[in-house]
Amino acid sequence: MINSLSLSIGITHFLVLSSLLFGIGLFGALAKRNAVMVLICIELMLNAVNINLVAFNKFVTPLAFIGQIWAIFVITVAAAEVGVGLAIIIAIYRNRLSVELDDFDWLKW
Image 1 (cartoon, rainbow, N blue to C red):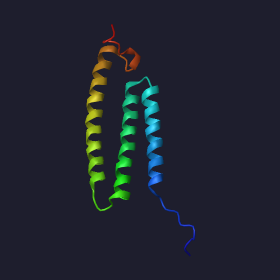
Image 2: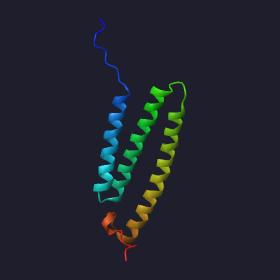
Image 3: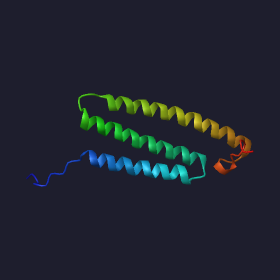
Image 4: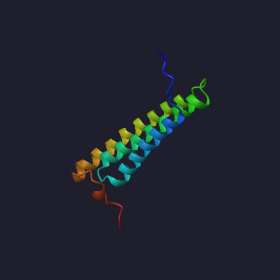
């Protein structure tokens, strides 16, 4: 028997999910003092952008794969960013024995 109240997931659901993920990532990037946690929060924000790209592609131009292509591009750039970021954090940890952002004061006068 088919239920008369058929629920469908629309673009609003994707946008709300993406906004929540981006907000959590932004809060974490601004509030955390650990460099690794900041990188994780930036990745969370990039994943929110990927959800938006794929959702808009599905609902605006469902036959084109432009949103998926851009999402793969963002994932590739994010992987490179994490690789470089973690390498820098490991190098800083070897010199300073800390990954707290408050300890990164080399450029302050």
